[in-house]
Length: 117
Image (cartoon, rainbow, N blue to C red; front, side):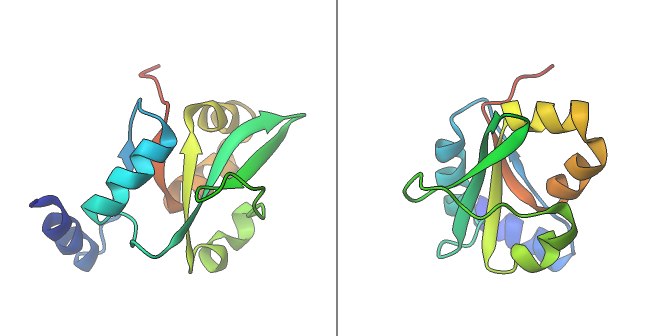
C-alpha cells in the first residue's frame, strides 16, 4: 500500500523504475499497474517472442499483434503506451543488438519471465 506513493515520489525526483520478475509478464504488468509503475489507463505492449530474428510485439489486453516500436522513435511511441518485455527478448537484444537493448530498457516498465543469468 505504500508502494504507489514511493513510486510517485521517485517519479517527481526524475527517477525511473522498472519491475524485473521471474513471473509471467502479464502478472508483472498487473502488479506494476497496482504499484503505480504503469498508469492504469495506459495500454501496454509486450515484446513477447523472437521469430525469424524479429521481435514479436503483442497487445497485453488481448494478445493481438501490436505495432513494433523502433529504438529511434521510443520517446514518441511511449507517450501513450507502456512497454513490457520477456526475458527471452531481453536476452536476445543483449546478445545481438546491445545498443537497441539499452534504448528499450529506458522505456520498458516490466521485464517478465527473467532469470538471474
